[in-house]
Image 1 (cartoon, rainbow, N blue to C red):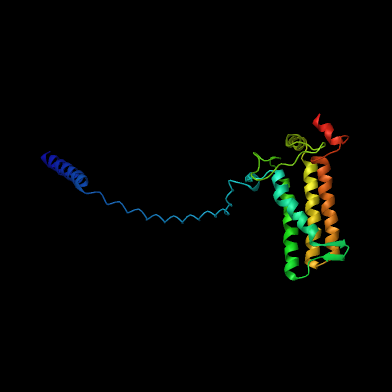
Image 2: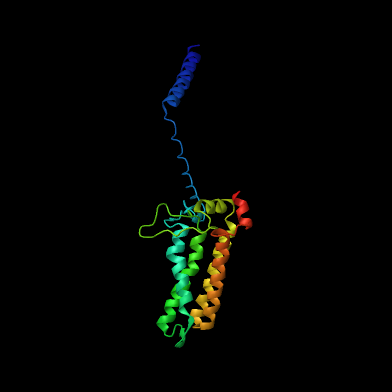
Length: 225
């Protein structure tokens, strides 16, 4: 009996010893994780085409400084420039005979060209909205006595406010006539200067009959009633 007990004890001892050894044995180290593959670099986003900066001010937003009134432009620019072109070619007849005035040298023709160019641009200046008369009397200038058919600056203001298109069309006619003089000056054509003088005179008179001294029966006056 003791023999079997001893065998049982040996078997139990061996069993518990195995269990203890198993508990004391360190766990096998975990295999290191395989290194992660580096992520493929992200493709750079395609650059958007550069958008031009939007201007904060457009051409239509730029204000013009208009220190001169229409009357002042006429007195200081249009009238003397037109007179210079008319006087550049002429024939005067006296008891002593006839005398022709005309450009003869390159310098003479250049002066005529300068006046023609200035008058052509004057038409553009007249198209820019501005007051009709000066704010105050012009120093040193004696005002002309208005004629019986002359419109006042206030009346012209009304006409322009109601419809400025006809006035701008007359201003364009002035530019067109001045360009005839410009071409004649470049060609040194005396006959062309006479033609230009007639065209300038007609352009001025047509505008004046509507915005300076329309007749008493002119339809222009109906717009003032």
